[in-house]
Amino acid sequence: MILLLSYGVIQTGSRAGFASMILIFLLFLLRLNRTAFIISTIFSLSLSKWLLDFMPRNELVNQSMQVRLDIWKCAIKIWQNHSFFGVTPIGFGQEYLINYNEFVPHAHNILIGMFAEYGTLGGLAFLFVICLNFVKCFHLFFPIRSNKCLLDSFLLGLPIVLLTGVFDEPLFSPQIGFLTVILFACWDKYTKRMHYVLAYPLISRFKDWIYVHVLAPKNQT
Image (cartoon, rainbow, N blue to C red; front, side, top):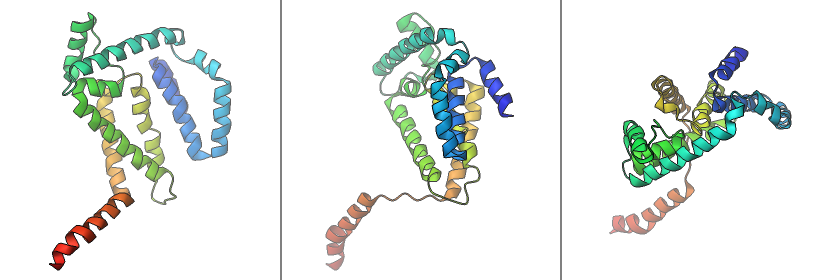
């Protein structure tokens, strides 16, 4: 099954997908055996030139990267011109065509795209969601727990969204975005059942100080 899926990723011709696949394999080895992970990482770095030659459409890497950089710069300017609410996903291509005489449907970067399409409010909300899910992953990844049977499955799926999102915008495509929404919904339901608790000592101390110096004297009077 792994070989079949890997062949499918290569056949798509996606360079971001190929790079994400290699990183996902390394993450799997990290969860399986740390020694195997270290050896595989060293081995992959030593064969990085060969892996680059094996990557789909590798002859266009430099050209494609320059195109991506130009799109990102233009997308950032679009966000700056519509910084508050953005231009919406439908309006991005139209705005790009008006300003740069070329139709580009999305920003080819999930983070820049969120800011350009949904403005600063939407971009910050997206960053908050990313940070929150990173906290969930770290909280579940390191402690030794007995009820983490599905965690490895999520760790082999969730990073793909962000890893490919660096050079593309997976949520732009409806068929991929639909699967992404289902994946995140399952992840949200799964983490709710974990009952993780985050402690914030500074906030707790501030609440205690408020009670002792503000609320307690009023209660005594």
